[in-house]
Length: 244
Image 1 (cartoon, rainbow, N blue to C red):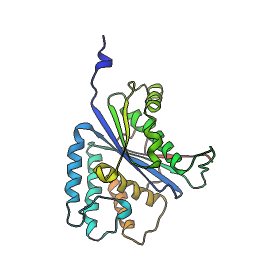
Image 2: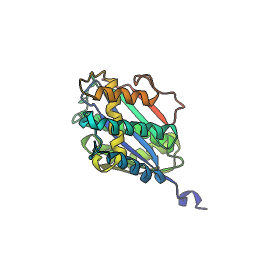
Image 3: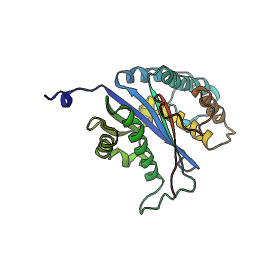
Image 4: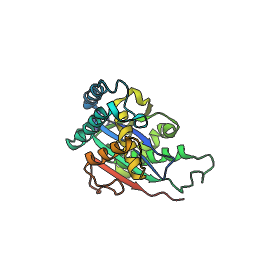
């Protein structure tokens, strides 16, 4: 009988981004979306980008409020509406980077440290939650801070199988993607930027401060400084402790 090896699993994709690696707290995370919902969500984000005040991609670093405020707030509402309706899941890891020795191993730096955070998030949240029933595809915003983990699919899948009894090779692909080509990565970018701003107690003189407050309110949380309960599935926040 070869049923287990030939079984075609439904797919799930995780779209991730990171923020604030040069501040005290680094944030990485993104949205897990079932394969049959990706096109629908991408289309909904594209409609928001057609707002007269946008006409470009969503990006935390480029947000200046004004005519863009309405569309950015609509994007945030969409993100948490998807989570609340269990049509997508949001997984976040927050790591204290301030005072962390990123060079304790020769050749390491902030980029390699972020790659390790992605690895932990993918193993202990994405693979752990979905690896038994889904074929997982990972798309991370391109850059040096995701390059290493993109080459570690076999190791991640093997670790997930050993630790969480997932299906073999549960992570089928890990690839970098240009943020301006993928709406769900843009959505992750805005949310991660807002989470990082609040976690780092950044006082914005620009409209970013108001948007960070809006994201926190939309999430239903009182703060980003606490972890979610162990049994949480659709919104998880992991406060990861690093060692110097």
